[in-house]
Image (cartoon, rainbow, N blue to C red; front, side, top):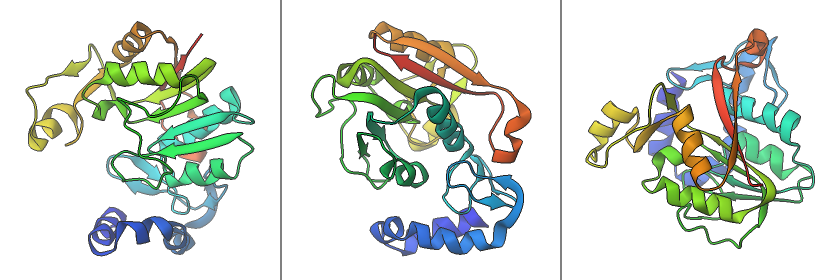
Length: 246
């Protein structure tokens, strides 16, 4: 039901209107989910339940965070610390954008090339219009699987990251090797082969790690399996990569 209503709203209402008033619309939806069983660690609301999405999992009705968003926020809070850092965030979900804009980061810059997300800039990840060594932290979540020339994008991420800086990356993953085929062009074929109409590959964890290391990054893989995350609507067996420029 939620996904149907959201799809309908996107068809009827202007994108800018939805983006500027997302918080208001979500606050109305959240009233139906008051409770104490669950909690969103991004916005802090307590809930009777999350909204269950067919493919993306448990959605926070107030801030719109997904399981991967909540996992990322916890990881950044516990492992990286964003205080006094310059941050570039690709395709930022509103839930994290709102939190980070109010944080004590030195600078928080958002970018979205396709205009799907509200952002400060419209940077092309294959030719990033930013100086060398500009950022302490780059968040690149569910972006690289859309990029035809991903090695070029990785080189650009490495270039604009400061020495000692971190790039936090996640994509969909599969077992085995990276699966990509330039001959697969239609939306229907990409959906069939890669799982989404605008994806151009499916990475394996080791495949992505090796590709990042080939452009100069030192990469650490984090896989989360503990069941304590049930209260916060996180997924077990979730993986993210921390790519460091040393």
